[in-house]
Length: 154
Image (cartoon, rainbow, N blue to C red; front, side):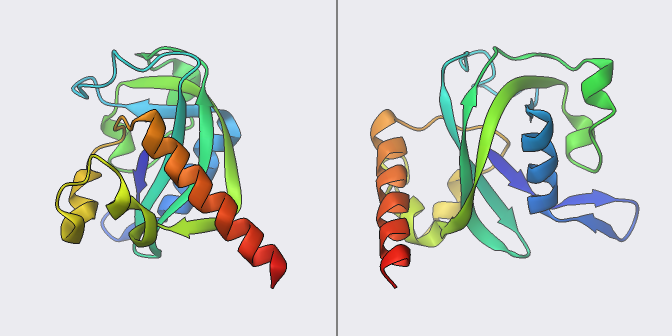
């Protein structure tokens, strides 16, 4: 699940992390009707939050998906602010957890199986939703758990 900085007005910016905090707090993730994976995501799936912003590129947490994609409701529409989110038409329900110590994306994402060009790994993370294999999901969680245990030992 990919989130980036959002724009409001000509010069106002909503940091990607603020957008992510709002979505996790309210338990939803936005999708485009054109996203090829929208119809494949289902309740019981798991996801990771990738943040690509001026503040950096990192994996900020994980979530469980609790619904299939559905059209935006008036209630969800009131929670959306900024471009590109205002263009999105669907959402899924999630239960997310943000990590106290996010992972530096550059250290782990180039090692994922779907990334063929390791130098341009960030190019594989366009749009708001991308599937990853169970093995890649496990690799990220193992890396996170190792980083946490190293952090605790310090």
